[in-house]
Amino acid sequence: MSDTEIFDLSAIYRIALSEIENGDIQKINPEFYIALSQFIGKLKSEEYSGVEAKIKNEIVEKTSTLAQLIMKTRLEKAISGNVQKTGLIDEEKFVIDSNDEMQERNEMILSSTLNGKTKVLESISKNNKIKPVSIRFLKDVEEFVGADSEKYGSFKPEDIATIPNENAQELITKKLAVKIHLEK
Image 1 (cartoon, helix red, strand yellow):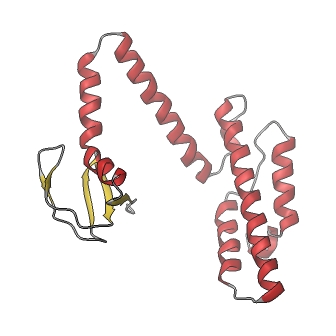
Image 2: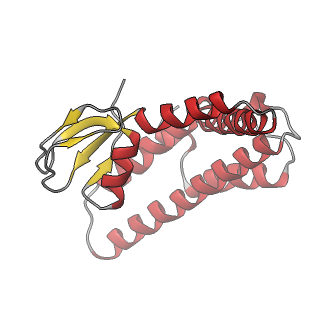
């Protein structure tokens, strides 16, 4: 799928309109988001001035808005459970998988609570506190003992570390660090 093959505002608008007007998830090219990303990235990298720059910026803004609308509409249909999820493409399945995992976790907590499985709840709580989270430091942070009883630090701005979730959340709240996602 090339940029010029499907991407102009009217083509993206037609995809959005079709998705909104139909109850089922519409079939779209499996590389839709990749091609759209390339299209927007190319537009953003082009240097214009004056009226041409304003037009380019409007095209980027409208394309972005339509892309968000398309994804939101498709995911809402999938989450509702009233339609087949077979029309989803890989990027959308990635989002739906996290929603399914959230529902499973919710059911696990509720079931453990209602069935008196205190040990399961304690284990979940402990594992959540010490699960590893990668962060990038924004300010100096002295050495500290983590929720897992291990020593961490000291850290300087721009250092990256993987530390227990409980400690990471505290540093993020204090604006001393930001969460990052390391590539696997």
